[in-house]
Length: 173
Image (cartoon, rainbow, N blue to C red):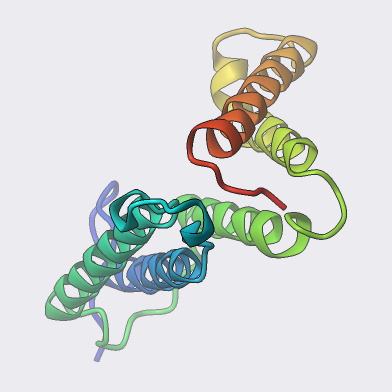
């Protein structure tokens, strides 16, 4: 037995289930990573001001929302057999986004290169490649797209690095 594909623009329950599982894995990883962070007890920091508290709560929230999405997808028939079809462009794009984020977090950060450099390069390349279509529609040249992406990458890297080091007292890799 197979079910029909959802109407154009509507996400299939199966795609929701896959997305939910990815969000649950991401939220769980963030929550676990936050739990393992230095709590700065040697600086006598209040336990409610520990650097990992907010990311841990956000990771737990993403995990919970992923679980809710998974339950909804199962109710909508995500586990029923599906007619063979080629993946939608949006599904492939989401997969590429997750692959890029995993490569950044698992392969690039903490492996010898400075955090600010890796983050700046990642943000620049991410914006350049994933925003190209919109930039082309706006009539921007490839050189201008690259400069805008580079500006965003440099600014994001500086703000993220300085915020974590100077405001939250988090040692970056």
